[in-house]
Image (cartoon, rainbow over all chains, first blue to last red; front, side):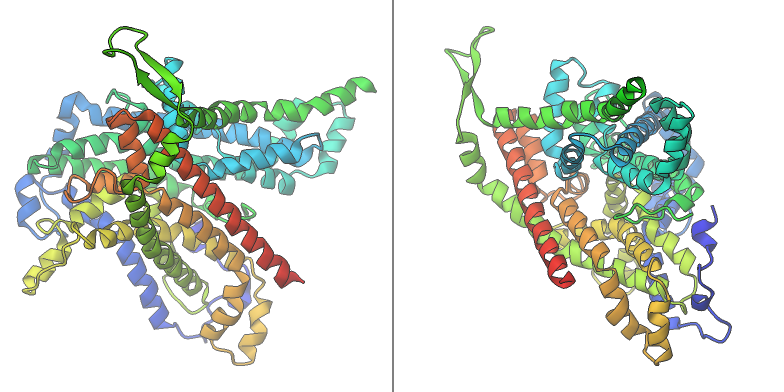
Length: 294
Length: 303
């Protein structure tokens, strides 16, 4: 987890030398950027600790005394529907990203390691999927799933989230870079079947890249609003984004609901921030090569 | 050895079959269906009662002429363009600046700043808009609190032109860190010998950044520009979230919101499908033109 925090520079020449003075102006600029990014998070942490009265009466960046009450209120709200939303989000994002990584791995591996008819065409067609506006997909997806009797179910959010054109692109790059042809050839000589070649030779080599694909897709699904908002009507199936949105809709005119919304917003960002700090070394993003330089 | 060659010939199709099946079911089929809907409309026979009274009939390009001449769609498109003109340069400018500062050998607290600036990537657009939405409300915002303490009136961010700033700020906040990491990663891939020589010649860090580093990360900049521009045109969750706080924000503020409203609030599926297809066509067209331009520039630079 310390990779991004304390990763030493690869080259000693560029490392801060004792003789080289700290450049304060750029350092302060960077810290200003950090403060700008942290302020809303700091605000929600503080606001979630305030009771209803304190929210409007005390300075907003100071802590209050009501966090546990707020938490209890949120948990009590409609029999704990908030926690159900959190579980739903984890389910959509976790299962969706896992399936997505698996589909991307198999597809990317095939595109990188085999020569076959239609290879270029299949790749190009799948990749244009990146450019498809989500709304142009989501409206007919809803109508088609409704015909199949699946609209408004878990499947309606899960299934459209599995295929990630960008994930396939990345998996292809990883497979091309991480799986040497002669290793595959040698295993073939030993009589390994094609499926086994993939599962026990290629897959382990592609693993770090697949974690990155999983993370990208996890965040994409967790943060998605449009698709579940269109697909779902029953609030028992809402992910936390749509749930909080509905809470805000109901509570906009009622200041008493503010504390619920604020506490819910804070708790909803905790899992992703934890995931993100815990798996930092996989967050090295090179869009072109998908580089994971470990 | 036919028996070992045959599986090898079919294996790639097997590996690709889940991806292809999902693509057909959740990309190709919906797009085809959207196009089909956009070319049809519903005729109601008689009083509209009874099972067979509503029938789908061919509408030709009527839905398209309707969509393209709809002043609300054009107004939404121009609002989103103005919003994008604020977001993209600001966000990428900041991302590039922060990436260069991080890459400079003499800045401190780099890892802390990098982490803090990347953090908003983990916050869904809905939650980001919710947080900023509260920060824009004078009664709970620390900014307004301080301004009031200083005897000043804060700017009105939830009305009129302020709304653009309010929305752009949310997007800049959410996207700068991700783009910064993309640019920073490509900066780190540059061998340091490239600027050691310039440094020895007494070149300033700023000059090295402008003359050497920025040209080297140009491909990343082009790519981040491309994806950011597309993402800003798709803005939906942020204005939707601010609506309860900003009552001047219309239900058709962005083209996405209009498609949603037409399809699901007003039940105008066929015209909504036409609008959605227009959005897709415009996105594809702009992407192709952009990629073509970039490729031409690249080949010209290469020759």
